[in-house]
Image 1 (cartoon, rainbow, N blue to C red):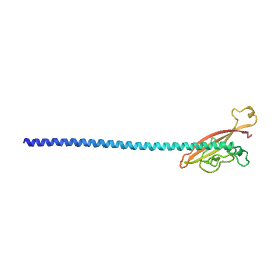
Image 2: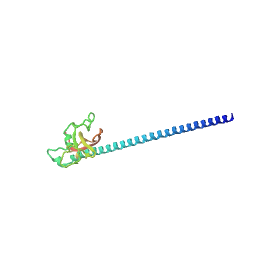
Image 3: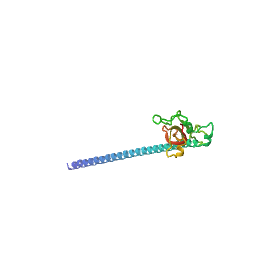
Image 4: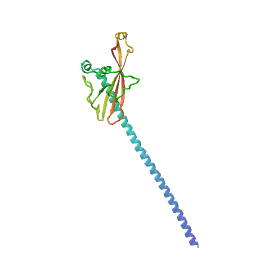
Length: 208
């Protein structure tokens, strides 16, 4: 009887130990799975963050390059309007003079838009740069790597007295003719257009 009792008692202890070991192993496996899931989530978050940062960097670079193209378009209008060869030519007309001959831009109802190439004076700047004695109307990219377009819209706004002008100018029927030049830049494949505007006042004879 004593031997049988000891055998049964020992078997119960072994079973308890096995159960404890199984529980411990189960807890270890659960903990390992939790660690694995956490590492996976962290890895996915890290990759997503890296992709987002890369997209933001590419977008910023695109905006910067397009803005440079818009600034170049404005500079192109100023360059051509100050070109004495174009000004003195009987056939070529600089963009400001050409805009003055068109209807004025109604600031209350009209908008000088980069997409509107019919109602305003258009110029382009290509990779060939700006040339003396030329109207910059040719097609082509401002830069080819990457491909970026640079163009401008020029509109006459109004005629007004020149602020701070001397009595000599005021008495000689000279007024300020105000223009708006909008430079536009767009990278090929991008739906967004980056634009910047310049308001220019030019001394010229009064219309009346």
